[in-house]
Amino acid sequence: MIPPDHPRYRSLLAREKLARYTAEGVVSLEGLAAHGRGEAFDYLLGEKTTESALLAEKTAAALLLCAKRPVISVNGNTAALAADLIPALQEKSHARVEVNLFHRTDERMEKITRLLREQGVRVQEDVAERLLPLSHDRAFCQREGIFSADVVLVPLEDGDRCQALRGMGKTVITIDLNPLSRTARSASLTIVDELTRAMPHITTFCSILAREESETLARTFSNDTFLAGALEEMKRGLSHALD
Image 1: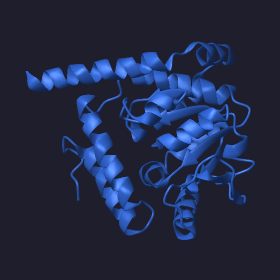
Image 2: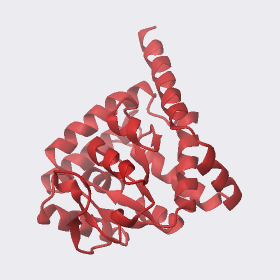
Image 3: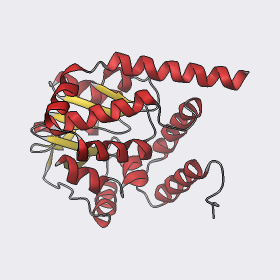
């Protein structure tokens, strides 16, 4: 049992969730490694949402609100860490939710879908087809879901699919603690923040943003600026650590 007053309570709780869901087959072993890599970058941010990340989260909400066919793409790590946060975001953004996996098996798809539904997520379960220009199983998606989306929120994404989606003309929003990753640099909008901090902020902004402000934010943002802001925050974090 992790005591709530532990200074790293949230981080340790996330690790515990991932370990449990790995044992249950929801999270892949490769997903555990990816999470650890992200944690290292979060240390440099002081394990908090920066001003730059908060503005990126506001911009993400604007993009979702302005979209005609928004979709939230969920993998194993996202389901394990944030299944309980997705229903509110789905309601406020009016987005479809689709499960999409790199290490894809029917069993994992069923387990993740069940976990999401237990939390109240409305998960699309149309027949998946190989519709994306990829050689691996993330090419499988639903014709009325990711394939037809104009805006896709893809937390904890892999670079290949991010690039493929951008190449198809889609606006891709990703949540990635590594501002140097191929995903972060390929996405239309990168939120450099921890998943369970970022998603409630996006949901809140979806609730309060007016249409005019949303349209302005969606039209005028610069992802390079957000990435540069994240790197500056990390440089400061490293400098403080070395003092």
